[in-house]
Length: 137
Image (cartoon, rainbow, N blue to C red):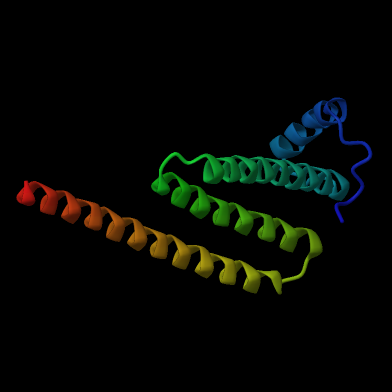
């Protein structure tokens, strides 16, 4: 639902840069169409970078090598999903998605805490097993 992006290319962006600099120097407001153009550019750039980040996080979750790496990747993944939902909120101009952002943030935080406790308990078990092995030998 992005606005007209048919003329989004590097040449148009470079051609519009002097207009933006002039408007900023003179203290005048930019035209509405130019502001929409820049907003679309920022939204597309943010969407692309978040999707790439999600792909890299999924690769880290699958590849590992340690459980802590997977937990950090999952936490980062939840934050990137939050970013995508915020972009969706901006594009659709619906404020109801902010409730979704809050829910995803709570779930992401709770899952990170749960995995961290699991990793800590597993490390304690390994340490106690090692201590018992040393005392028995």
